[in-house]
Image 1 (tube, one colour):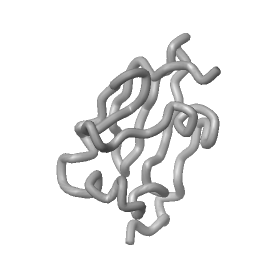
Image 2: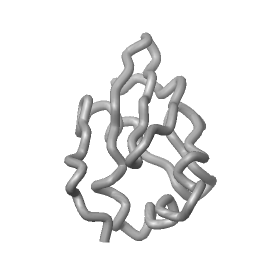
Image 3: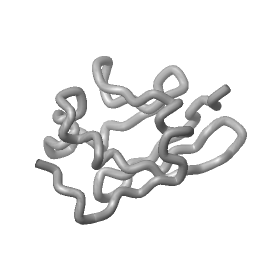
Length: 87
């Protein structure tokens, strides 16, 4: 079972520092997701910084969140290359 997210800190270049129940911390890059319609709003100035914990996962609003499974399992400790285009 995937542990819940208990804390999140937004970092530069659309990255997150995510803390899971049990204390494990992982970096997660949102850059690969920013061209999907569901996440494009996060590219607007100040929107990405609204990241917070909601119901055991990372959310930015009622409509934008990221599955804890994706944060924990899919890309453990991931960091997207700085050259990854946003458009």
